Length: 176
Image 1 (tube, rainbow, N blue to C red):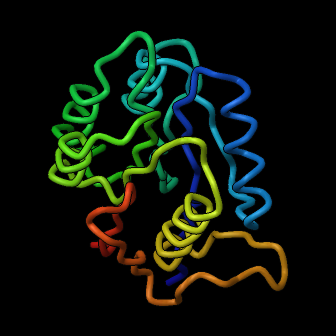
Image 2: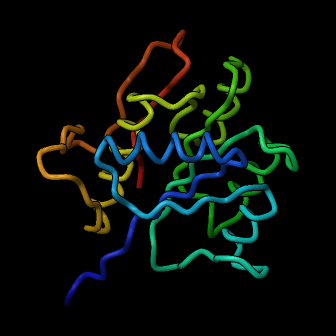
């Protein structure tokens, strides 16, 4: 029996166009060529994920990585993340939280909600490596991760990097 390949799609929740373009540029420079879907506000995020409304919708045949910005003007990011985690169809989507300022309590809350990373903007090489590693881990299940030749420098284990608890990022192991 043939395995069905699932595409790994990156969902970027970003209302600021300049920030989105920088995020996309960093990912492309790191060799992440996966499709990136931009969601500009909280309503669009939930409509996409719950497959409702008039815009683009989640495809059940794809894997997703959610790059989640807490500072969107129309939502409480923590409450929206809780809603995503409560939904049986969405709860296993890996989430990397992007925020403008470091807040230890917020970071701990994100960790307790199963986020795989908490990162302070602007995005940088560490961010791109985290996304690269997560996509690579997902692709081990789906077989559909695309890299520039010679740029495959992520850990083959599918395990995110450890970082100091004093750092503004944290990584945890991917679980199935």
